[in-house]
Image (cartoon, rainbow, N blue to C red; front, top):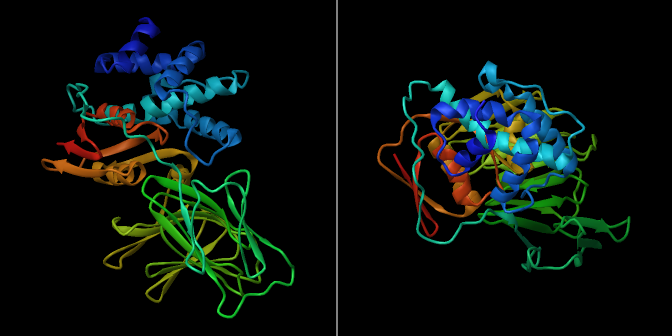
Length: 395
């Protein structure tokens, strides 16, 4: 087998030939190359910590999922997962490498009609575009706007005997100063907003946990009444506190999600073709236009702008990959991928030439600089031109 060091060096410099890719991927899965992958990934990612809400335990799970899904690659390149005795950092590095090369690389095998794949040169005219991070603002009932990026941990405000705090983990939480606290007349509402290139985590007054994706917002009362109702736009993942006697309701556009306690994701960006709800645990009822549908775990319901409603069985891990610090492309068109990159990197995307109807699959960490993410996509014969925060896809 050709020297792995040489293949790795050629891969990192975009000089790896298509005829060498199969050998490289097979070598990358071998345990004896794990340390070399770790060093390469560290150099590639500049020792950055993954920009995600996931901790070490979740990263371990991500690694196992990646290894379990290597069935997407050709059968003769499959290997057993790395032994548990390998240190966590090495296994994460190996998983990172797999996320970068196996997912996108599998696209080439599924499209074997491509005779020659040259690695186009990404045209960079300005400084690096860095990935998004934990950024948000919180607007209080009296109109006060708190910049959560700069405010220190501790008590931020007091509303209706409710203390608003930022804890040591950077989460926004609500704490009753008195157990007898009741809503003021008309209640008070707070609104959290994430900008393009931002994400944030919130614990609602009832204990429900919410993860907001980029360019999203959620409006909620300081104290919930008999029905826990919130309004949102953009994308959010919910882990609802179980209170059977007080239903939890999410309202977005003309779609309403009813739940008593469950884990689900809602995507409702105006620029996307449909509003979708994906259920991970429990049960929800999604209502729109007088039509109500009950979801089971593993199902996703979507409603497009023409009012068409569809229920599909989906890969739920892919639907919430953003929460775990990943872009996950599961047979996506390039235009869909570019909208995700646009929101996360806060860039404007343009297309030069006719947009093809090719489908892309794979996973990429969201903590990469934009140029690094684009290099991964370039492996599928897509070219880009980056000028400031303007990205042009060349077809």
